Image (cartoon, rainbow over all chains, first blue to last red):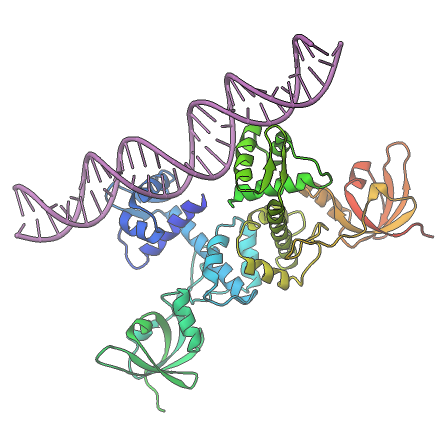
Length: 223
Length: 223
DNA sequence: AACAAAATTTAGACAAATCTAAAAAAAGGT
DNA sequence: ACCTTTTTTTAGATTTGTCTAAATTTTGTT
């Protein structure tokens, strides 16, 4: 598989998450930042190689093989991200770009040794699960902050948006994976929320709260 | 620069070592395992980008810029090889292939952090020098075993041929970088040599001796 | 059901990197 | 100096991945 083919497979996998429906050409074009006509060309090639099911005008769906490939690439991507943070002191907003390149390196031994070096991590620096050698990943109880009851508590376990802008925002407010967060209350008007993190109280917009995952630890709490 | 362009630049650099002459199309085609016609196409493109000097029928020579690029790729290649051996327990005959891929990853930060993680190594697992950030490398007193006086002593500091076959041969005879070697004598007939390494005496062919570098430590020795 | 809008595919073009076969230039031998 | 061999370049084709513009199919709305 070429890098480009791998990227398409990965893109389709991501769009398929949360829905058993076929992925449309336009949706995939948006994901890949390319034109629908280019997508049509590529998916024909991938269908030829049995990496996806394709019926004209009906969108695509990964085959078993395609899914396996996607999981391999995702495993590599997330292991490399973990490596960059754990071993090379990258911050969580810097790793994506480099991991996009590293995920295409072909060497099973390399991946497995990397996994061992990192002590077989279950989650990457953004809280996303890392598939094991067989493509299986651990799941974990998590809820968007915006969906948490008020009052309640939780531990930050992941982000939905992992853009540098968002991650830097979190850094500035000392929100990181593993951080304990108290959910104080919610404003009825704009759904903004008041939370307490590291002894500091802060007000966050619905947009922010909708991109932060917590593992709930208590339905309520006494001050 | 594309991967292919980088590979050509690297290939030209390697052929240029030990000689100020221009590199011929045929020689480069052999190095790159491709056809002369393909080489002509590529060197035109590279000349266009001022990475090399090219006059029809006169071969090529890297420019300043071209050399700088080559050294960057070589630095990356050798740092990755060191990483694979030091951190991921690869053996010295397994690293080349993977490093061929890793050397194309673009991230200055990654390279520098890797360098730091490895404690700024001067030489890679085959004894080849690793250029620093500015493209400068340490040199070291070394001599082919075949050129050593008899009797004498030295420490193994590098290999000329780094093919898996040769490296595995060395492994089998417990010859590794840093190993002390006593040069016992040389057979006038076929130039084969008797050496002592790790308490074991062994007979090695001229071919082998011509691919192993020693740092001389003593002109002679008493048993 | 008919028609307009949106989505999708096709057709044709282009750049990168390669190849084969043929032409041109350089090198070598007598 | 001439002719042959080798080297190098050119010409034309192929594959991968992309694009624009045009044609086609599907969807949605009245």
